[in-house]
Image (tube, rainbow over all chains, first blue to last red; front, side):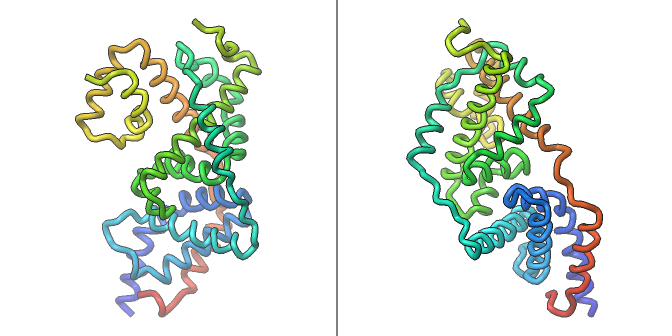
Length: 191
Length: 81
């Protein structure tokens, strides 16, 4: 009985502090509040049931993200909603985005625009999921490349490649928006 | 001494804190002095900052959900090891 109480106390100290992060990650995966809540709850219930598999001193948040993602993928497989990614087309798009050169003022007008938050959320939602999830884990959840590799079950090189391409795609979309809105000069017009 | 191409190539790893200390120091020194790389650095820094800000206040779990989750966790009994 005392052992059970100790384990529960350790679980609460290590794991429950990450509730908001896990919920945000679940929301990023599902894009829907009710589904995010269900996925978060399933994640914590599974974490509690498999608490003996957690190694003290390791990154509890990355461990929870791994559980969360695996549950999500299993659910998605069951629902047969998997959309195959056309790698060739995406590579081409990412490489096009790479050609962008930063404006000489560091893009001040773009990043000071009051509507920028809405634009970023909209454009991030449009990113292909394999890029979006790495951008979210790195830039919104502040996970290291090594922890993201653990969560996704891919090599660190793949994490970097997806992260950098995802960021480039997102930046290209923001720059397009800024040019259309007159916040940045048209391409080729800046010395 | 880093050249511009190397610095731009490693800029995101530098901003992500993923480079070894010696490499990061070289890039920092280069960025301090280079009029070509500095706008790229400023742009990437602002971009990452804007991403964080865009999501900072969004999507926190509802209090009733947090209560429901904690009750569900409390409901798990003897199988916790």
